[in-house]
Amino acid sequence: MLARPRALSAVLAGLAGAGLALSTVAAAPAEADPQQRPIANSDVFSVYASGEYSLDVLANDEVTFLSSGDLTLCGVDVDEATQRVLYAEIDRDDPTKIFIETNRNADGVVAFTYDACQGGSRDTTTVALDITKLQSPRVVKHKKRRGRIAAANRNDVDLMIVWGSNRTNVVDGSRVIPADARIRIKVKRKRVFWTAFLLDGESVILAGDGTVDKIKKKKRKK
Image 1 (spheres, one colour):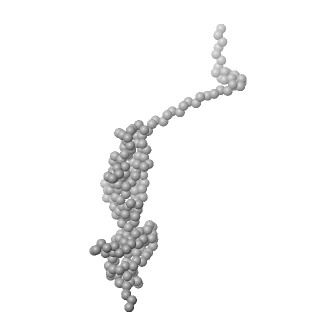
Image 2 (cartoon, helix red, strand yellow):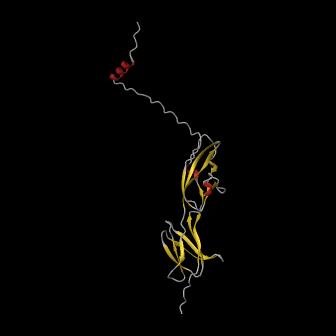
Image 3 (cartoon, helix red, strand yellow):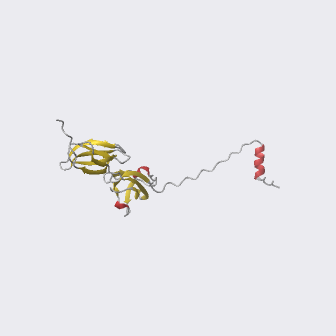
């Protein structure tokens, strides 16, 4: 008569009792599915009203290994309400970026979407813009000093102010108005035109402009 097979538990117990080590082979982990399409990740940028910017929105996006070719921009969409304060398109000078122009009265957070494409695949995501509107500096003739104007900056960033004649397009001078500060400026005209702006990277942000009239000239010493 053939011997009956021993139960598996009894065999394992016998091997362990004999001091034989058992090795187990772990199952290989299942391979993750390769990425099927490019992934466009959302972006947030801080910008100023009345500014022009070129945004590198593809910098944080991911390519797929199942398609050949580079990751490109293939669409920009701005809803009707946002179009009143924002213009956006694929940058004509650098098609890997999005050109935007913000309205002078824009303030707060607005958003638009774009499509990132690679081969025949695409993904859509949102770009949020945190827009700051600069306050115009207060520029008036100095009450006590002849031949002087006073300029007060009510923003938390430095501004540049230039002044001169808008009729002859002659610039008499320029000064920095520090953030939350007031300066006095010596002028040589009875009437001066001024413009204040901020340099934000390559974008020139107009903060304000105006004219100061009836400036008393400084008396000449006899």
